[in-house]
Image 1 (cartoon, rainbow, N blue to C red):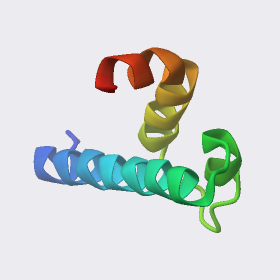
Image 2 (cartoon, rainbow, N blue to C red):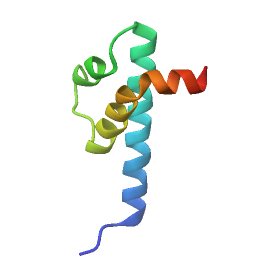
Image 3 (cartoon, one colour):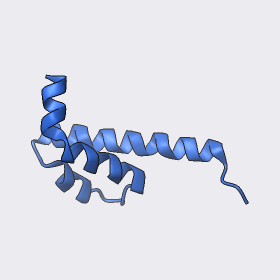
Length: 67
């Protein structure tokens, strides 16, 4: 059975929202991104983890670009 594309899109949207929440919480609390990610009471989706890890890996470069 094929995956429902509407649910797949919704899941990715929810993962992006989760990742954004982690990024905001880390910034607001002055904590490490991966620490905040690990402290989530419910394990985030694989895609949300991938986003946060990607940001964490390139944070210095992103800070320069965003300024």
